[in-house]
Length: 165
Image (cartoon, rainbow, N blue to C red; front, side, top):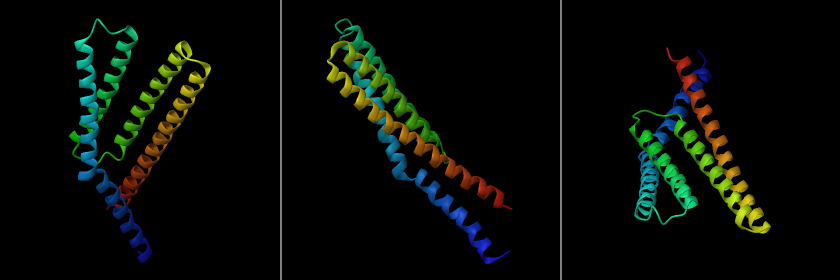
């Protein structure tokens, strides 16, 4: 085996090791703890607000509260799932995070546009639609990048498995 082939084989595990070390690092885990706490606490605060005034809130506010609670719980569940794993996820958590972000963004943007159409002016509608489109585009970009990162990590993993004796 040539020296170049040996160097290439060593490069794959080093690349994979660096990529996976970042995935399971303390910093990454603390980020997930923060996301879980933010989502769970946000959902809890909104649930408490809703519980204290259930009859006084209009139906649209109750729907908005239910949506916000669902979004907060989705982030908390994702963080709990990631933190409960004892092995690298090969960026699956990033893909799931991006999907949650995209879903929350699209639902929020559509609700905002619907509200602006019913209660606002044309300027309000255009501004809300433009803002929603910008945020949705950012969420789509995050999803594309997360999927690309996952594919890269899986390719590295597969290359390592093929090179293993």
